[in-house]
Length: 136
Image (cartoon, rainbow, N blue to C red; front, side, top):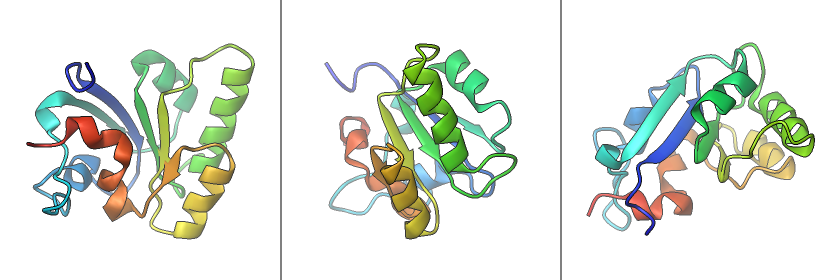
């Protein structure tokens, strides 16, 4: 069932260590939810959005996390490239695409462009798609 296979997470984020954002060592893990169990998460972070479609194709993540402002492409541009590739049948869409900008307006733009959710960077661990992979 869900939660048995490692959850493959690919994050494009240029300024914060996403591992810290998702785990109890960082700010995540409030009592009501629980942080992600990183032993069951295969997390890869890219510190720029260089060659985003090649990275997505190579890793085939379950979850794609997109910061908004980063070089060379914004998260919105990455999502637009992904949408076009998926529509053309060149790429399989990750099961979940989630914005994680520090500005909620940017996250709304990502959701408007087809992302499944958008959270302030420090709250992205709350995304319900992570629920089967939390610490007990």
